[in-house]
Each structure stands twice: as structure tokens, then as C-alpha cells.
Length: 155
Image (cartoon, rainbow, N blue to C red; front, side):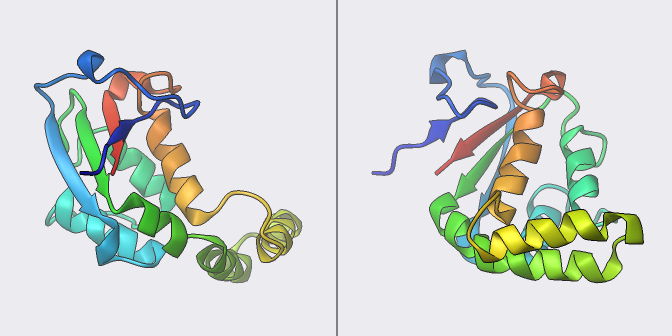
């Protein structure tokens, strides 16, 4: 049996007894996607079916605030096969995403994105998986927007 871990912004486990048992639970499955675009499709089908949204990191952050079909009082986000997602959304996918970003970013951001891209190619810096976890944790206990009441469970 796999043991699930609830995490705080700083990565420390949260006592399960403190987690709300009345919150709605959503489960995304890392075996169903291997790219950031696939993650966005998974979010669409699981969290907000039928909703029209931007399918980008900023829009994902907005979904976690509630009001897009997710409960206003927060919810539990279970990420099944999260270790598989950590692998699939690792440096290769990060390089791919940063190369795409470099093509479309404002000229004033190209130096920064180029630096991030060079780091990712060297296996340095946050990965796409870590970008997503960081965004989610902002809305969890201990995060800057903890009042949104999101709980993350990595399975």
C-alpha cells in the first residue's frame, strides 16, 4: 500500500488529523499525462469539466482560488502517480516549455528565460513539476493564499 503525504509550502508533512474531512476531493493521475499541456487537459477534465480557461500557469493559479467550478471553501487535490509526473515533467519537459516560452515572450524577458533555459539544459533549477507544486502550495496551509483551503496529497 502506498502511503500518501500531505505537504505544506515548505515541504513538511501535515498531520492528517488536522485536514478537513468535509472538503471535496479531486484526483488527477500522473499516468494520464506526460507534458504540461497534458496536465492542463487533466485539470480541465477532473477539476473543471466544461469550463473554458487559459490553460497556462497563471490560469491554473486562478482555478485554485475557486470560482471556476471548484468549491469556494477549498478542496483536496490528490495527485496519483506523482512520482511518475515528477519524472515526466522533469528537465526534458522543462527545456521544451522554456524553448516555447522563449519564442513568445516579451523581448525584455528573453535574457531571463534564456538563463532559465540554459540552467534547465544543465539539470539546474526548478522543473515543470516543481512549478506546478509551487503554485499549488501557495493555496495550501502555510502558503500566501492559504485562505483558499487547498490541500495537496501526493500519492
